[in-house]
Image (cartoon, rainbow, N blue to C red):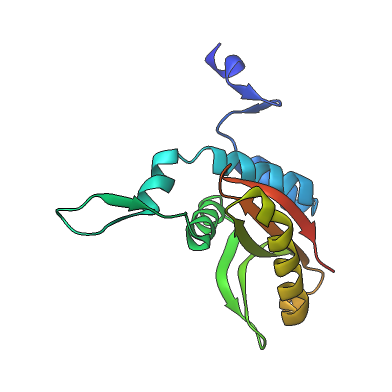
Amino acid sequence: LANNILQNEGERFFDFKNSLFLAIFHKSEVALVKVLNRFLASIPYDDFAKSASKRISEEEMFYSLHAHEWLYRSSLLAFFRGAGIMAFGEMHTNKGRSDIVLTNRGRTFVLEIKVAYTSEEISIKLAEAKKQMLSCNYAASYPDAISLALIIDDTQRQIAVSEEVK
C-alpha cells in the first residue's frame, strides 16, 4: 500500500538510480535534467541554508549568503558516484576545467553548471556557460560526448534551463 501511494510516474519515490542510468543510456538531456531536479528537490532546504551561512563571530549573528556553485557541483558529484556512475569534477583540459564529466557504458556527458541568483540572470548565465564551453572545447577529449550547460535557479534550487552545446 505504501509503495503504491508513494509512486512517482511509475517509479518508487526514492528510485533515482534507474532513472539516471536510463537518461545516460539514451543520451537524453530532458530525462537527465528531470532526474537531477528530482534529486535537488530531495535535499532539505536547511542544508542549503547552513552551507550558505557564515558566523561573523561567536557574539554576532549569522548572515546569509547564496549557495555557491561548488555546493551544487559537490552534491551532484556525490549523487552520481553514489549511483555508481563514473563522475569527475573540475576535469582539466588544455584550455580550462569543466565542472563535471560523467560517463557510463560509453556514454559521456560534459556538464557546465552556472547558478542564477535571480530569474533575470538565467539567460545571462546560459550565455556565459555556452560561451565558456565553446571557447574551452571541454568535450574534445571525449568522443561522442554530449555537452550540457545547466543553469540552476538558486531561488527554486532547480535546473531552470539546460541546453546542449555543439
